[in-house]
Length: 328
Ligand code: UT7
Image 1 (cartoon, rainbow, N blue to C red):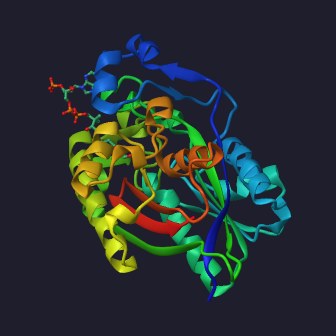
Image 2: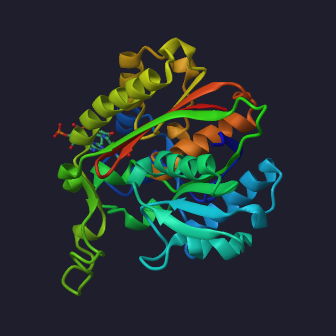
């Protein structure tokens, strides 16, 4: 059995920006409401012709560069997204030639916003058993393509972006590892955060075209309550299993959906905000991309050091929640 290490990180965002003030012109909302209720000031949006896989490829190249690896060293690409380039084939396969990872098998993982933490855990299993040595785990979204710009309950929340991580086998003398990951889904809540049309249950027909079901719909209040409850539970479970206390954590990396959700979780777990990485103000909720992008930022700023104990926590459509405790 081998230990798992995050060897490199990278992120990429579209250039086009959409501020709260610009949204005021599109829908009945205000900068003040969005700031106070979510902490979001602005977000990024893909341009015409720009693809989710373009963002994923740009982030992956940066992560590989940091890891000191070439794309040909990658054995597996796990692309975590719920806004794929196409229904078929996997966005992982569409991205593969964009980086030249010709020795890899590539597939997608859809666990909505929770995707990247679940992807980290899947990669961990392959590394531990020795099946693969280097795995790219990407969390990337082009959510703006699925936004109903008439729905103020959702259109102010989401943004586009990609975070990539190179997950590799740790050397014997290194302390890097993943101590524990806890994950849970409750499919009874499938309808409180979804995109109804476009799958095989409700294929797009002429009648359905342009209807709200083509876009993201959400009962925000219910998701908020679930998020706080579930993340506190998952975090307590990983800490218990790995025999660490909250005070031992060097850094907390929560899903960046809403600053109020993060503050509520921190308060319940008694994690100081100073130990918490945030980028929700700059990019909004980028779903599967939030944890890997905010972590990449912290790595590149030199805030995270090798040996630090890092707690990741996330939730999303499904409803699914997950937490993972790692030694960086
Ligand atoms: O990554 C997982 C995906 N989603 C999430 O994590 C989202 C989780 N939920 C949330 O972040 C919050 O529930 C929201 C930000 C979505 C909403 O905040 P809230 O404090 O729960 O507001 P609310 O839904 O209870 O709505 C309060 C009021 C309502 O008006 P009334 O009924 O009190 O008159 C809404 O119609 O705010 C109104 N409202 C808005 N007003 C201005 C809702 N959206 C907006 C808006 N601008 N954009």
